[in-house]
Length: 390
Length: 246
Image (cartoon, rainbow over the protein chains, first blue to last red):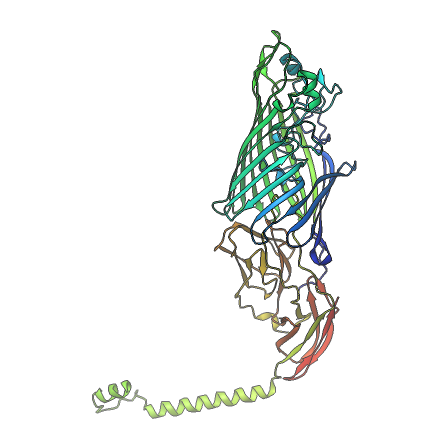
């Protein structure tokens, strides 16, 4: 008996012009429980557990020194948004140094580079990159009392100063928007270093700057042995928009109200298992103008541990434990001293089954717990996700 | 010299027993036996048809391009250079093998290396019962796996200098991937008979030791198979058969 011969389903990126132009895609369809607690709401204002996401990415190699890269994304068949669009310049063809100019990829942290559904072993995202806090760059609370009043309302929050329309808050780090600026990346077999100057901040990447400052971000990553990756990241930049700062304290102060963050991450894999740990500390300085004032900075600490184990070929199990904690502030006498945002803990368990090598079915259950705030405090959510990529 | 020396040192035989056989008789018997076996063998060979061969060329009207990397928009740096697989190699095989061809199952080993983000060779043709070694010759991890119906396996992540192997017991096409580098893929064609051949860089092939008979022959390249072509192999002769794909 001879092997059955049949045509294979194409599964690679589509290439044109002798490989100088490549187009890839990533489609994920997720359907899960309703989320009345707004635990899985993203900064693109969709629920992560009920989403159809289509990504199309492309690369145009314009010679040995320049590559143009871009990615378009739509969620729930809404507007097609440019997620990233930049030129990658390699000044010396034989040296592993690149300069990226435009809407550049994230410098900070580990998860932001694996936001594609097939890179994420579970369906939900780490809290630091997805959970919306009650902070906004374009609107600020006038007092500690007002900030405490808004705990857990990051999905739609309104403040007295700045833009007074209700809008979403920001996560610690936005994994779903690229910032705009210049980035330099150098790599060897063991060490990779990246630094960038951009218009926005980690929490609020921007295309057009909304204040007079720039963010500086850097990441150093070492790979001492195969399977082990350890990284540290830092970022600092003005967070509050010029309009919100002017509304609070007048002109000329928008550079003073910043987001500063640092993070550490470790990944180790071997055989059939993969372990990841990531911690992020973010500090914000806001213009608080009325009593009760608050102790600055406002701090948020995120800790995430994730693991994946391949049980049999094409089947894996995964889990993530995530916690988001916040520093205490003192509000009105009735409020007392509380974390400025309600702490959140998420435990997500799930697994995946590879139907084809580029078609993956994932199932996951997550338990969310919020310690305070006005919304639902505990919720168990389930979801299924089908992911296809080429 | 040694035997001669030993013989001369033996004590002289003074008496023969009934059970002793003279050396000269043994030699005569042996010569007679060997002559008889040779004669029978030659007579048998004269009646057994001699195996032939099938040879020819597979012309590819269009050679597929090697798979590209996915555009790494989220990566801050350009990926390192890599080797490109040779997609010109085709496999030509008998669709239906002669009777008795399936009885030989000798095992054996083949190697599919992982080198500079490429499986080398890109196409491997083996018989059932063989094992394939997958050494990692890169400085970083690879994770070989296949979800093919013929053989599902996942070798996990392992570093440079390490190797894992898989035994293939069922005939069929096995598509091999790397879980870490999505542009890496390869084919293993597993046959239950030995009548197959890989083409060289110019598309030439030769299937050896084919017993005389009429066969359907198929050419395969990168998932595309030709329609079977009929060919007759005469006693000890070479049949010519060319293919055009795509």
